[in-house]
Image (cartoon, rainbow, N blue to C red; front, side, top):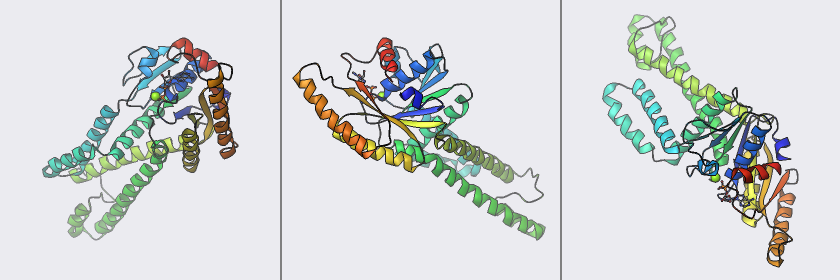
Amino acid sequence: MLLELIDGHRVVFFGGKGGVGKTTLASATAATLARRGRRVLLVSTDPAHNLGHLWDTRIGDRVTDLDAGLAAVEIDPAATTAAHLARVEGTMHEMMPRHLHAEASRHLRLAAGSPGTHEAAILERIARIVDVSVAEYDHVIVDTAPSGHTARLMALPEMMAAWTDGLLGRRAKAEKLAEAADALGPASRRDRDLLGARGATGTSTDPVHRRNDRLREILEERRRLFGRFRDTLTDPGTCSFVIVLTAERMPVLETVELHAELTGTGVAVAACVVNRRSPRNQGEFLAARAALEDGFVRLLGTRLPDLPVIELPLLPGEAASRAALTALGEQL
Ligand SMILES: Nc1ncnc2c1ncn2[C@@H]1O[C@H](COP(=O)(O)OP(=O)(O)O)[C@@H](O)[C@H]1O
Ligand SMILES: [Mg+2]
């Protein structure tokens, strides 16, 4: 049923608490779609990568073939943040006179430790992967990290786009002022330069103007990237989110919360998967667990009556082999 629900979706996110089965189910989904002839890219954003472990292959931060039609990449958060900051540093240095470079770099080193920087870096990486992969793959399946920030991550493209718009808007204003300054004649050229914008006639070789043009290009490229990503995330025919949980009180309540946050940012939730359901026919103890779980599945149904729910059984062993993934995939 899950596979039908996400059938035409180019980008599918799996999210939920740690340990509920996100990596297992993202892998089982990807493997099953690939077996059905789709080209699938599996992306892990979890710093504690276990995709490689699950597939018994070293994957790492480059696209690696796992099977016919199936490739995977494990985003390295530390390397991604470092590369992101190096790009930002490059941009800042282009913006600033040389004597301020050391100071700018010092600030960036401080920013490197902040969680917002980390999220922005991962998000930009996902956006870039999705951007180049949608043409090459039928599905990009993203196994997200078990953080409470997933929903905020989904809202970030809009924030980044708005932020970039603000900067571009300020630049446009500066250019209008510069045009006005130009019209007043050469005496005001110094003012125009102070505004840091190019004049109406400007095919200038002035380094300030070149720097500004370069900066505008960088901002516009990022603006377009986040705009496209935002469009992808909020198109229910293209992208959806699958929430994975176990049939316990806290995961159910957190699922309700995550669902509200996601739909609030315009991201469609295709389904939720209640994983590791206890068997009813394996003794009293497990039957009692199963009855308890029934109550929590009912609670989920009461809170989110329109959301499709897929239930998967607790397997006797770890779901950590290709055979186990195939078996799980067939039940999805
Ligand atoms: N249906 C299941 N039955 C038994 N074990 C499962 C099942 N689904 C997942 N597991 C096991 O649970 C553990 C956590 O799963 P994992 O997919 O890594 O969770 P997450 O990515 O959400 O942290 C793994 O050891 C996995 O093999
Ligand atoms: Mg995982």
